[in-house]
Length: 386
Ligand SMILES: NC(=O)c1ccc[n+]([C@@H]2O[C@H](COP(=O)([O-])OP(=O)(O)OC[C@H]3O[C@@H](n4cnc5c(N)ncnc54)[C@H](O)[C@@H]3O)[C@@H](O)[C@H]2O)c1
Image (cartoon, rainbow, N blue to C red; front, side):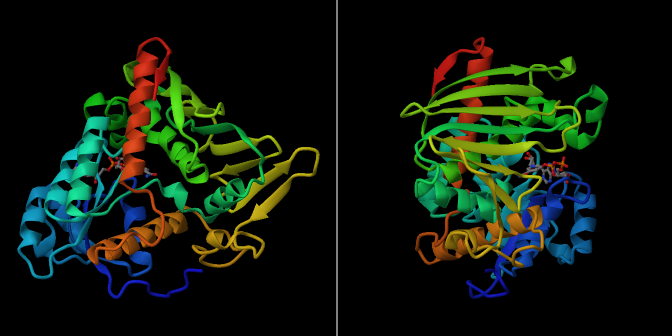
């Protein structure tokens, strides 16, 4: 259980690029990073607008001198300080992730980068090479992976509770952009602009989340080939898709599906993963993250509850308040930031990360999946090797 116990000697000196006052995701980064005193926010380039970024940084309690107009000056000036930053989170729109993460690694910083890590597999592999060479940690905020019951699913699958794995059904299908008018906010507009969002909208924006959950739950399952078809139901979004179906064939014959959508009218999040074996199935839904459904063929279904003693020890490690009291996405993100901090602290001593976290490999994998999906869809919905 995480209960104020300290696993690193002092908070890592940390900055943010992006995540400004009106951003969608900045607050949860700060809330997650600061919750366990694993990080201390000491600098930032919080906004594309330098003045707004500075004002916001000051409001957050950052020294005005350390609120920089852009990431280049942030990395440059902090490198000259004896108390300069050691880690940075990149929470800007997709099109800037590659250059900012690359500059951070070159400056010798550990990085937490938003997904998608970058636009192409070639870029992702270049970042991996840089991170390996500089022995720096890159964490990717596949935030749902911080929910403890994802660990429980991993352990149950590993001990054979489901039998032989046959199918994995995944979806992240919300309805918030069902109409063109629903995407008039600045935060939604860049998501359908290929220059800023990259080669896809919903595949990268939402589909990669359950995909990463499947990698955590089923580490041995390897995609051999996939087939994707993508649509722009709101025509102005073309060539970027607001809906996509991906069919995947895994080595050994198991099959997987991912439904990625922003036009599932009436749906809030609709993120779900169902792993189906020869004996039983497991299902986790992000709108009820404290419950994991375990369904053995021919028996009444069971609902496993977060925090209960019957769970595997790894599913109790990140527990924060015990069973019954609902935990949510803020806690899940804090669990990841806690693991990022432990990994960075270990890397500083030249040691391996003590706990698994969504690392640069997860980032590369998400980019590879989107690239292959786009290739398959744009070739007319054909099988492509993974
Ligand atoms: N992990 C998740 O669950 C999750 C959820 C939502 C968004 N995201 C990702 O987070 C990133 C940001 O998304 P958002 O919805 O918060 O976007 P947003 O448009 O709401 O906010 C972006 C913020 O970055 C700032 N910014 C833009 N360019 C900048 C630059 N060059 N330097 C400094 N600041 C800059 C903007 O001023 C703004 O404050 C995206 O990559 C998105 O895919 C991830």
